[in-house]
Image 1 (cartoon, rainbow, N blue to C red):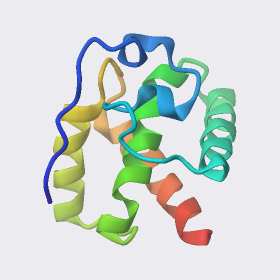
Image 2: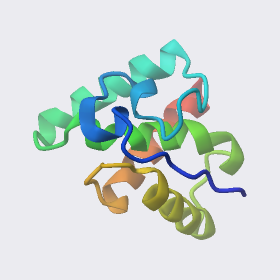
Image 3: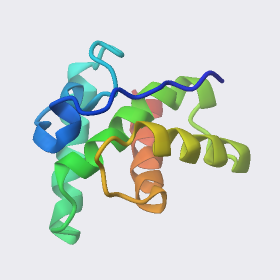
Length: 117
């Protein structure tokens, strides 16, 4: 699988993202369905109730990674997929301070949601 290279120092990566499209590594990287936008915002609000320190700017790239990779991995997190996604997370996370262990949980939950659509 070809890895995407992030663009550094864009306004979206500096932490001003309010929508999922604002935190993509590239402008216009992919279309974001309104339904997935709504899911990601609602899922983040749910997570913040349990983990108030989880900022949208940290979580947003994980939702974007989930949307970008779901079809390629058929929504299955195998050991090899986990290793590949961790490497992609390191490249595409931008300014997110979230560790892969936390991002993985968001990616899996987003994949579950995508599979149900």
